[in-house]
Length: 124
Image 1: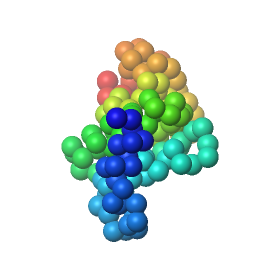
Image 2 (image 1 turned 135 degrees about the vertical axis):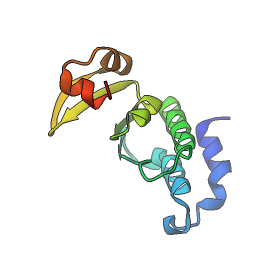
Image 3 (image 1 turned 45 degrees about the horizontal axis):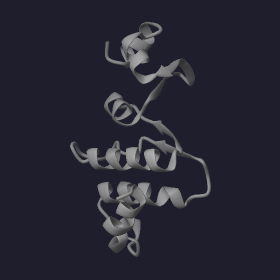
């Protein structure tokens, strides 16, 4: 079953409901399911799961990964959570005061921080 099929069958009953009628986790998952309907090739998400309690973000993370895999959509995911970045990303840009300190493959940035500032941002 594809992500889009799963989205239609798993969330069909929610399609007619307003966002304020849904719990936070459901709002985020429905937003991810609706994303492919947008006419674009990129999706910008600004800390979308920050208000969700752990382990609630795991389902939206899985939905987002499935969306990326099936649509090949570019997702720019802004977050303060390294856990979120690791869960959904394959590249990482570490910013400080509006400037990119380091950008690259997720594992490479985590393994080899470019400077002390990046290391501190990664909790090292």
